[in-house]
Length: 323
Length: 218
Image (cartoon, rainbow over all chains, first blue to last red; front, side, top):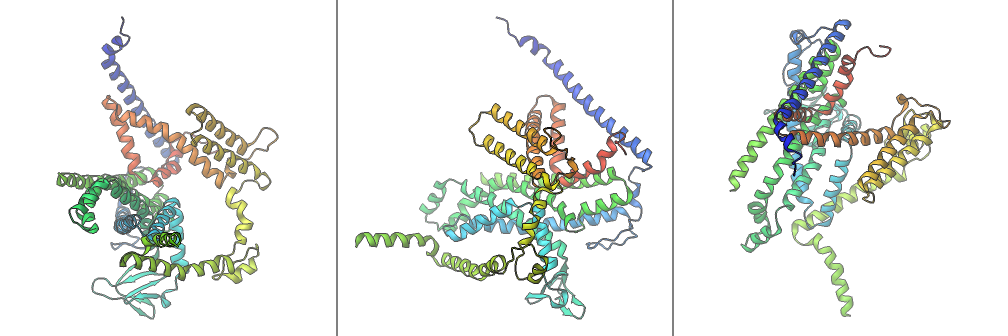
């Protein structure tokens, strides 16, 4: 009997080589075409290219920044301010979302029907409303519904909440109400606060589901075994269930942290000067879209790969400890 | 007597998960108290003090105390269908209904794969035809005037329909034995997954006009 694929197999390796050559050729041709076309279009429009603009004065000021920044400083420093602002809000939101998500996930597994229902309702509501809408709602609440700075809410001693943002004790200094609003201590703007609350409220809903799934995926027999050894439910949770659940929760939680960092790019909707907002302003001023967008993509890609590497390292360590 | 007691125990048993143990009872109490404090205010704002008439004067008087649902009553066509010509609103409404029905039918598991696929493609084409018009005496409506719910549904359905086959191809490509194909797929996957959606939209908004040769009228 003839083997229909024998012929094919003999040529398989050379065929594979040809296919790859074809793919590579197509990819290169596409890239060449795009570069050529863009270059020609840029020349006809009189837009220059290259990254030299990074060393010219930016000419715009930035609302909030961890570094000193003014309009005379170069573009690269503006981008740096944007990166730091993105990192600041993303890290704070990751911490807040993790804490809230753990609580919500644990609460959605209690026997208490009311508490469980409340947590389930939170998860469903916050997961199913677009993040952009949530950000706009938080910003509206913070910027419109709060009292102005001279009548700031004072929920805790030293903590003031008003339209100008949140003031809190920081660096040994306690903010106090003066004639011109609140002075001293640390402050965050309403834009930062809206973004932080939106991102962490949204992220917490997803993390709660990850926590719930992680705990539920530990076999029931493990809980019974812990009880048979005389452990209280809390001891069993700490020593038997959580170590196993944590290992299962790390990969999806990593994904969620990456998503949260990328979602912080919606900051541009509430006017928080994150990297996207800075890149957008620079792009509009210089017209160098390709350069600004490639910086933007490179930074987010770097952050994503870095986070993936860090949690991958932690995951492998957890796996080793488990054996 | 015995049956009544067992009924009472059964009712009492319903509440046990809410009340056994201090922490549990405390949580229940805290939730109930919070609900009693918050809910009357919400009810008052949204129902008792709210106004249902589209009347700007009365709404201004209610500002901060009651809801003004009249805005929704008056503006819901704009919210749902955007700038689509008012007298043609039945078209996007019918198109949305058809697409949702097709999606529901295809997802319900009653159809096999091929009929479901045919149904969905037909529904999408019908949706576009209905929105665009041009035949059967329907005036043409330019896609610049499309908006609201139909656009959301169209983009979501079209996006999913395009993403699934492309995703399967990329997944297969990444498992391929051809190293070059594999690395191309891996590069695409990691690049697109690692950058935020908004930067991809920036590429579409700012770079596509540069990629494409002479734009019409540009």
